[in-house]
Amino acid sequence: MTGRSKENYNRNYLRYVNSFDPPTKHFKTCGRAFLVGGFICCIGQFFRFLLEYAGLTGDILAGTVSAILIFLGTLLTGLGVYDRIGKNAGAGSIVPITGFANSVASPAIEFKTEGYVYGMAAKMFIVAGPIIVFGVTAGAAVGLLYWLLGLI
Image (cartoon, rainbow, N blue to C red; front, side, top):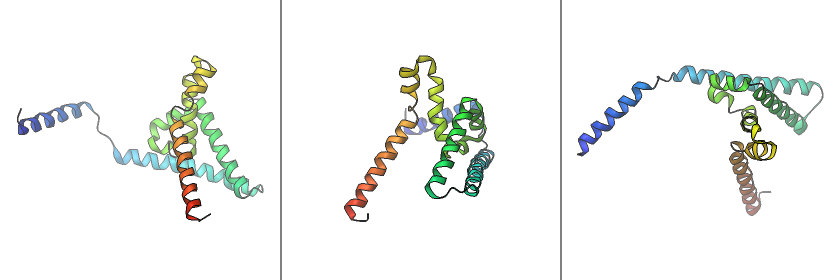
């Protein structure tokens, strides 16, 4: 097969494959992701204002709001609601901290039938595990770099 006929073959094959793929509605998808992600952040901000009014400040306030959002993300995952939100919102539901809670809770629920140790506990960090490992490693590397440079 010559170079030119190979290009035509590849182009025709891609056209054939794309004919079965529904067109992506980029603006609609990005708009939904923006709105849902923003709404989740607004919920977090609401809890922040509420807890600030109750007297919490600083790290305690930030930790409490994060814990509430993680709890809500895990609860909605357990009820099957977060998956429906993610199906319609795409990346907007993955980016906030609730998406991280969903990525830990989903495999735990899915593999619960295999037992608590080999199923739920072992599979819980299938998705979130690499993120945790990378985050801890990157944090340690940056801390070591700061220490070596004398910035701390």
